[in-house]
Image 1: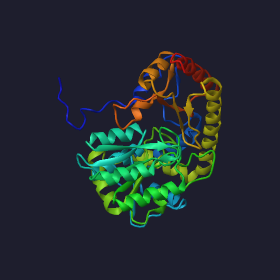
Image 2: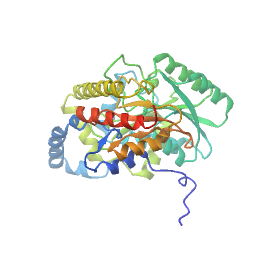
Image 3: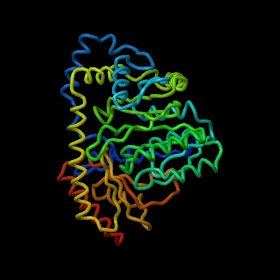
Image 4: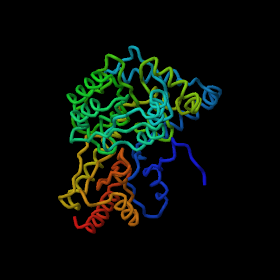
Length: 394
């Protein structure tokens, strides 16, 4: 029997990634993924760009690149962020292999074994596993209807030394779909300053708003370079290209570059060039609007199906954007068992247990993705889930 390192001995596979293994089954309806709708992928435009690049600039596209990233894409990304008030004074932007790597590099650069990280409860499984892989101590803070409970956050920081980082997904949170309002974001930043901790603001969904008013990023209010900002092109252009970015204090970004050199040398130049040329040649903002509109239509339909078929006792969130909503069956239901029963009936969902910082915590909650399935599949899938719910006497 292999004796694994302490860093990985308690790690478990992502429930989301594991669910992909079932998707090849005939008739499966998946609400488990975190991907944009396939019909939003600009595949024809990307095919044309790839052909041009591989003929006109093959050496650049297929050769090693610098670790920091493809320079034109870095500048394009900075301009997009600046348009939303996220300025670059004292900060550097590096291109990463997806937003997940931006999270992992932050932890690798900042966290020693036993250091504390505050995270939302529930939170993103990819981030939680990154934290666990460095033997960080996780401090869960409950989610309210409008994001992390700030009073609870302050109590945790006041009562525990050794906490270095607050991890938050303030806009269309994964897994709940909740968006934190402006005042709460300001308070979080104030608390971080008071207790001298960093904030890792994970913001991969922020452009996919289909209802309500936009809320400034926490990073846009940061005048001390205390906020580390992780973003991604996975939800707006293509998840498979694996292009994200990290925007952080110059010194931290410099260390993250060294850490990235150890991990993968650099993000594939071809992927970076595809993204860059797409933004240059096409109306990226219009592409995002179309994607968000489609997501909104699917979300509204899923919510109407939930309201029609689920018992009234089942709580659900009402996202204004992003890719997910969250349902809770209440106490007395094991979401792992519930998800397994749904999968037996060819409907894939994500158990809420996988999103808990405390892996022993029981929950009756589960995450649903509304972007991937068609309208007919959404209704059929929700009806099937409702039948499983009835088995629990709800």
